[in-house]
Length: 187
Image 1: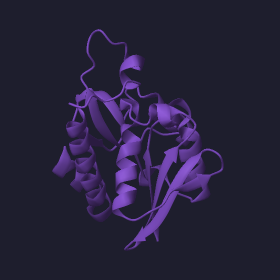
Image 2: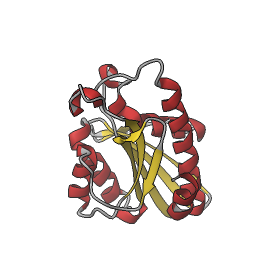
Image 3: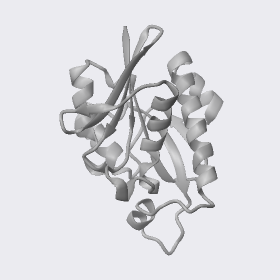
Image 4: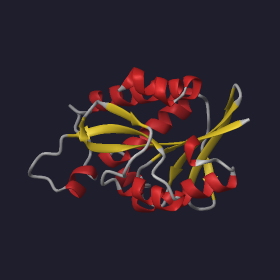
């Protein structure tokens, strides 16, 4: 049975739950809900959920170590369950993409996303698929940290919900047909 690990990045705690930086958590939470999967703790590093779909065992992960240390949970689960980097997809926010857009990519740099940077460091490769959820553009008057740690406005929430719905649909295609098909359909 092939194992797939899908991780959503964010920060733990109620004070961060509605921030832009938690877009990755929102995607995996919605995906887990759609598939009836429940999260449980893993080694004080985060939460994970697990279920089978056809010939695949799917693991969802949410690091609870704050964004900059996301790699601890992801690399730990990958080692424990013997999941190669080629079977990993990471969902996270991207302020260079317009709010409501999503982009899938097979590999590449962290692009300034510190959680992804830590995952790349601990996994030892940048050959990791990612699903970026647009939260931008960042207004000129905001520095990057203040912007990503800011909450979505009521006017922005419908666009976020649309992006999460697209992301969940893209993850379904990723599992059923592979990354290339998901990229072709959703990019």
